[in-house]
Length: 143
Image (cartoon, rainbow, N blue to C red):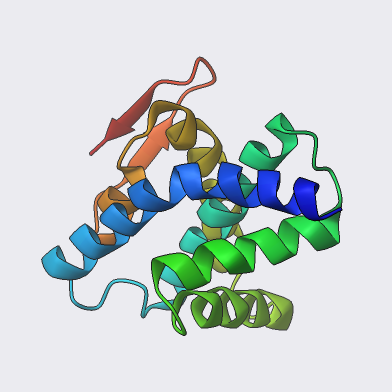
């Protein structure tokens, strides 16, 4: 079991530097990044999809383990803050007050899946206020 967790952490660590860079770049360009409900839910979807997809590539399909590895990633990227942002995003979506939050989360998931494969910067783009879109053939555009 420990060797599997080590393998999972190693896989998650591969995406950590890019995610850290994207978030830091976004915060520099937009100090309020990750503070609005829409940004939080987009980031939650993005991070969850990117993490789960990298874990599935190494054979991890267990939701509890995936959640542990997502927390591991968050604590490595922004200790004490990013995991809290994700939890607040999920709490906001649980309230079901604004359908746009669920749309932002789902959009974040789609972008996170594609962007992770390209080692891109769409999380930064979204958090600084640019509209991020993708097409089914994995083309992403920024407007």
